[in-house]
Amino acid sequence: TKQIRLKERPVGMPTYETFDWTNNEVSEPSEGEVLLKSIYISVDPYMRGRMNDQKSYVEPYRVGEVISGGVIAEVVKSNSAEYVPGDLVIGNLGWQTYQIANEDHLRKIDPKQAPISTHLGVIGMPGMTAYFGLLDIGKPESGETVVVSGAAGAVGTVVGQIAKIAGARVVGIAGTDEKIKYLKEELHFDEVINYKSDQYFEALREACPKGVDVYYDNVGGEVSDAVLRLINKGARIPICGQISLYNLEKPDYGMRVQPNLLVNSALMKGFIVSDYGAHFEEAIKDLSNWLQEGKLKYKETIVEGFENIPEAFIGLFKGENIGKYIVKVADP
Ligand code: NDP
Image (cartoon, rainbow, N blue to C red):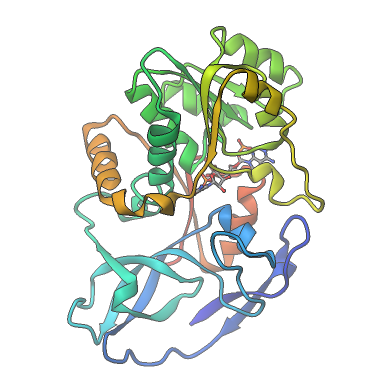
């Protein structure tokens, strides 16, 4: 099996030097284990945090360890009563082409329910992150203005569409014209602003004539500082991610806007999708239903080839993806 390991902890933006490649034999599955062939490997921004030597809500990767994350795989050999060869599963697995896994760490997925890659995106972890952060913390009401940053990504695309389902006016923030066109024309966002334009703040202010009731924050930094200047009384601000800060060499605590939160009695609350572990099934049910009814659309950026995983991962921080970024490493 081919494997990708953490070679050294990146300082700033990860590079090819961050990764190491190894090739090893895989053993036979023991009792309760299966041999898996990886089909789709997910690259996610949170993995950058795990490359640092600091404890967060997930343990850091150890140097030399195979990098792990969401993977969709096919059972090739089974020594488990629960799985037969050909079954498709999802789990927190290694960046490797083949691997042994314990049956307790896998969940079966049904290729008839939805395309299997969607379990890494729209009906998977990012979709649920959008669902809980928006509905439980943001609580959008009909007619309110919801602003979402990182709007064209895996989480942001779902946030904007659920906000539309809730009857809100949706303003997205993204970094390329292609993304803006997609969000407006295909996902029917009301307005989309390019945060890289010189008139970013002015454009945002014009796009939110009634101010901002919910700000779903995926990026932090200056992009967010601008939105937080526009909040209304009683605004709610789910803090989902801070991707603009993940590769900074020196910490920047952004957020020079707390006084504005105070005078507006605004609620700003951080969360981790796993806080809602007890409610995952409801979320998957709602997201799957919306998908089937055509109320929720999705796009994926899929690159092929195991050797392209590091490049795709780094691409997240350059904005290469629209929707969920996934690497396809084999056919099912
Ligand atoms: P995305 O699919 O949104 O991919 C990342 C996108 O972020 C890029 O395409 C890029 O788009 C944008 N981006 C990259 N660098 C910057 C920057 N410096 N400033 C502004 N935008 C930038 O990733 P996900 O949807 O998977 O994740 C979105 C956010 O949600 C992340 O911050 C992630 O950490 C967080 N998250 C949090 C979870 C939780 O439990 N709290 C769970 C899952 C994700 P563009 O071209 O627009 O710049």
